[in-house]
Image (cartoon, rainbow, N blue to C red):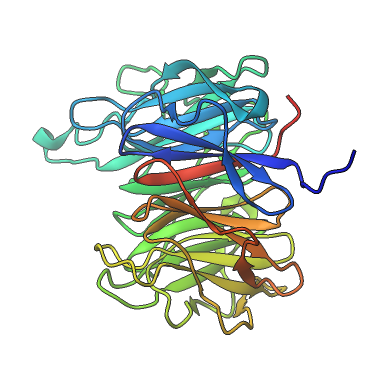
Length: 388
């Protein structure tokens, strides 16, 4: 007996806010094609799902539901069964409100949730002092069940002498990225990067001295970690323009230093850079949302070469930037680094592209590159673990 299929190389789970659902897919190794998993779509376990994260090993999935004016946000825990099927386990709460981001550390021992409003947000307004900062809630993860347990802040106490249950960050945080020893949050309220040093032994977060970085940006949209380099995207004007990418090097105590070449202009024809992702072949891909309004005619992915000092040069391909579905909001690469995918909020699709390991160029998949998913997709995650 013979066959010509590539088998399943990974599972993909895509969030959809329209019906509070999760779309489950299998990724074909040979074609990059997506096919639905059994029972998909699944309930997100809450309202307004915005972000999700996997525990290393791929057995547990955490979905961050942002909530709305009448329903609080939560963290829904799912176990991942055979063929990528999700089973809801339990929900948990972060310490602040308006959760926007969730991430695990590289060991899979800890989970971090970013809230735009810390528990003491605006608490002292009547006294003339207003705290508009966000916060990170840290959890340790049970290795057998995946269940999170709250980690208290060992460095800071409240007015009653009790250890805080959160770690405060800057004004109006929107994103958070974890490296092996640091966590960086992007604070859009004051255009800063707020770092914490991460202890691998207990999950404690410690703010390094004088390490908050003021960005030379007007509309920073993302921060991403690529080894010793950190890339920040700046969309610039909300009404147009290509935007820029700012490379930094990560130093001791989670400090950041500007790469000598400075900011890199996005490609002509691209607009509103929203996220970056990189490969081990030293290619950087920039997701271009197009604009903040309903006109998504320039939705695309820009491709760059990462030079030895962290600087960027465009991939030499006359199709670069590469067109994707309308209003993309999230981007990921499969475990074999053959395929790049985007979730497209305005067209309710996932778009797939094949990656050239030689040049970094992107091309259409052999059997169609567009796959319908659950309504108004936000972010998604890909698991490499298929041997359940």
